Image 1: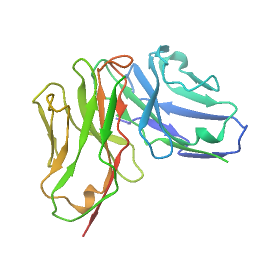
Image 2 (image 1 turned 45 degrees about the vertical axis):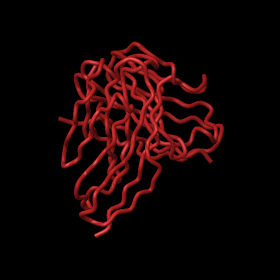
Image 3 (image 1 turned 90 degrees about the vertical axis):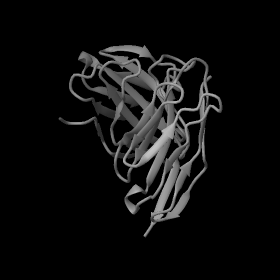
Image 4 (image 1 turned 30 degrees about the horizontal axis):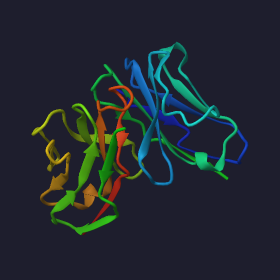
Length: 114
Length: 115
């Protein structure tokens, strides 16, 4: 069974450009989460989908970030326009049941904004 | 809100040395506690977890005990190997912040084990 897949693994863009990150969760997992780690600090929660619905987006930093999960399968996280402080590693995770079920993580996308 | 504080790194040990990585948390309610590990070039993997006070999680020789009285979940291993070199993250869920589902992480501890 495939794990959580994220791509690209690394993206380098200039300030002001747009970047779209993609996450494919484990098949059958209704819950999908986005997190990010900035500047080697703690990993912070961004948002949580249950199927195609946003269950909790309290961690989204501002309106330059847009997450979607059309059809309840894969998800995209778009940053538009990107700023220098958006650089970091963006992780996606999925879980089957939610609640206190185990979250399985992808390898992350390293975003560098120059 | 919830928070997790873990030992600053990096930590460098010789093979077969004893490892302790300290982790304390702040949360109301009854959070679940986790240790995740990230090996070079890979995603985060759950190493172990504990869901209630005095529970001990264990896996691959690592152990951590949920101590509610000291709000701690320290990671230990009796004899580390070179292959244990990785970044270790302490985390909690089900506390007071947000939904029961989001994980709150510490800042991570880089461990390097030398042969």
